[in-house]
Image 1: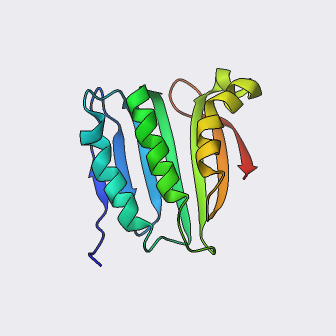
Image 2: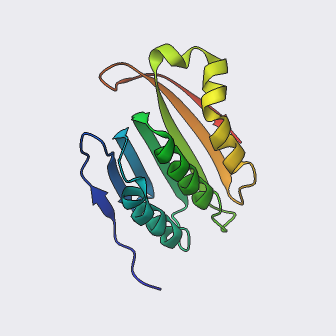
Image 3: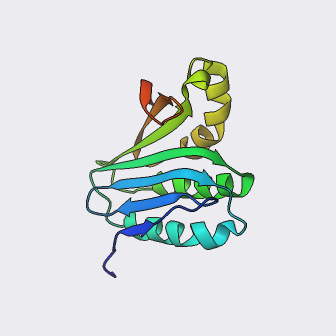
Amino acid sequence: MKELKNMYVEPTEKTPLIDLNFMSGELILSGKSIPINAPRIFEPVLEWVYEYIKNPRQTTNLRLNLEYFNTASSIWLAKIVKALSGIKNTECVLILHIYFPIEDFDDIDDIKDDLSPVIDVISSSTVSVGLKIYGTDDSGKVLKESMIFI
């Protein structure tokens, strides 16, 4: 098995910050994700995730702090979440951290609608999954949070 290295990609106007840390189990995507060529951005991330799940940390934190993402990005995000939910070690835990603008946070029906694709993907997971949602202000500061176990 090849040695897995951390992956770090600086954000641009149209692509997110990507910070995947094998040693800590912290996987972060933040910013905007409206790339012209989504596979060019996300295929390396998905390949990294496939290697990571062969020897995951006890706790994996996937932090999706995307202020905006297009449909192409959402398809790749679903693939990434699906791959992570396939971690075979039943002693491991996957925690999804999802950030919303605070004004959306109080409308639970909208949040359920927004999260339904994610919940559908992880419904057949082989690992224990927790979902933590955050309400943030315009500067990204967390004002409210809630934990959901799936």
